[in-house]
Image (tube, rainbow, N blue to C red; front, side, top):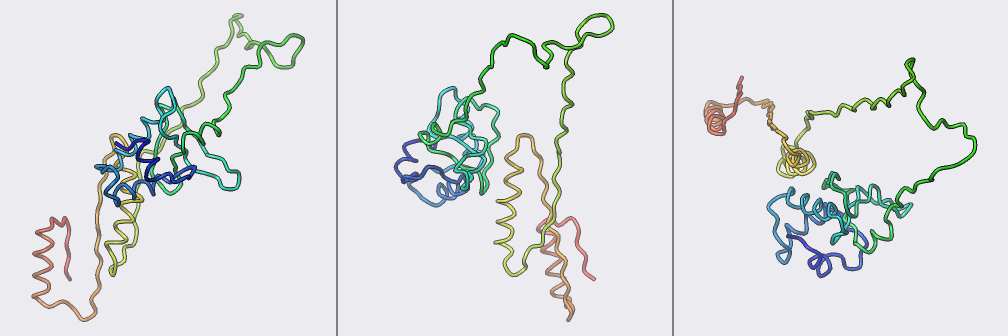
Length: 216
């Protein structure tokens, strides 16, 4: 498990924060860091660090604003419902830095005497009973993502790796998600395909489990 000792010894190097995307690359590149099975392990590690009642080895923020030197949605402790993502914006923050940037807790203004234009109670209904507050309508969250992208035939491995990292892994790490991938190939050969090439393509497509294949 990635802990404070690893961060202090190998990674922080005096920095206030570290990109989670960079951290994921580090643990896969350097042998002196703990090996993680997949991104979900790193996500759960961050969630555990900021979900405890006391500050952990690092805090989490959705992003860092260089202009204002502030952290967006900074989670230090007790953040059990925080949704951790690994992208180019999300960061973990050194604990001493996070404490300095800790958001101020809302304070109660207490009771006030004297007249006020703000009503202290809800207006009664026709029977004299107070009308209870109506809960706000629940926002319906989208439940499906569908996308298509052009892949370079010259460097398909590079493009596919970027799609897997930027999209597929963002979806597969969500609880209960079901992700289906489909690769579609559309090739135009001006000089035509001879019988040997057609036979090779069809046999390979059958072996690879292609659902559809057309040669015409």
